[in-house]
Image 1: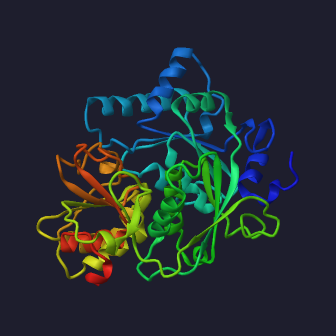
Image 2: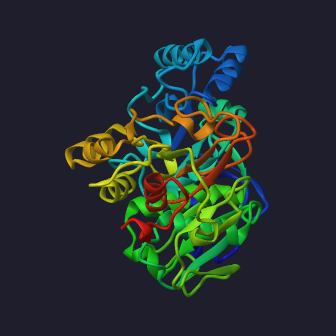
Image 3: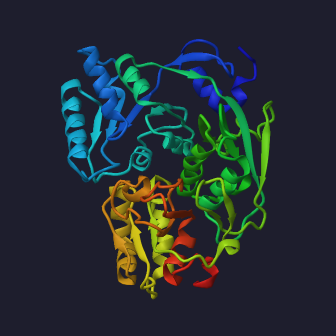
Length: 409
């Protein structure tokens, strides 16, 4: 086992949770997670496997959290049956928690109110579980089969990732948010640039950024195909800026960077907003596990106050959790959005994966604060999706075309 493990926060956490094998990048080793998560899309197949095996007892039931968030409130008979199956399984096996629909999106709710702590190892049957790296937890995505095994045994296997340092250099434009840094990172590394790696992210800008912005960056890190992503700026003896770091470091320049946007087809197809401005949008969506937090809703409300959503644009805003919804309501943000002509929905994933609420018809264009803009992601394959941060989304909902926030300040 190498001597320099402790300079990597990711490898240090894996070492603390190791059951069997080496903590050596490329090794296949076995670990014991602190928390196991599944939602209403990925969990039902795992429940079927456990049922087929006839397992009467799950060793990690108390460490497991189920979320009903992707297609809830149930959109059809199959989604309703999935929710019922998870509720019955929860009751029968004593699952630690069933977070019912309306409480929040898994990658928002799970990381609120101290439910996850720095140094913990979290696995979830969804690639965007990487979100939790913003608070110093190592969060890795798994499939439904691995979810079933983890619930049954309390263990999971992992090919140990190689630490890869990411350092943001400079200070961006005043309009930039965490989403803009995230898009720059994804565009810089490419859709496969994180494969087999744990991205350990640092830079002075992170010390000035809110936790909401950090969550967005770690969430979008999944679009590089990384195993996990971690913010290390709160751990001075860890990460790419620590004196003992002995792994590759990638420096991403953000000095004077303006708001970013991803053009249709991939989150890695990034550009400056002003270079793609003027594209007509039919729908603007603010929400998802990427940008459904209080900071995002505050930005939208502040930009819309005293203005109106363009008559040819549908603006849909979905808070990421009940806590976010309540705080935004108390602060008056939701009223400002509604008065401007926007629509508010209860906490749910909604249109992000094209399940319901704002599904796109043939040929329409959406500007979304979510994390993926693959062909057909939000509806018909002929529709198009641009990705941006909350400020660009709000500005564009006012003008009816993709716009820099400066245009409507």
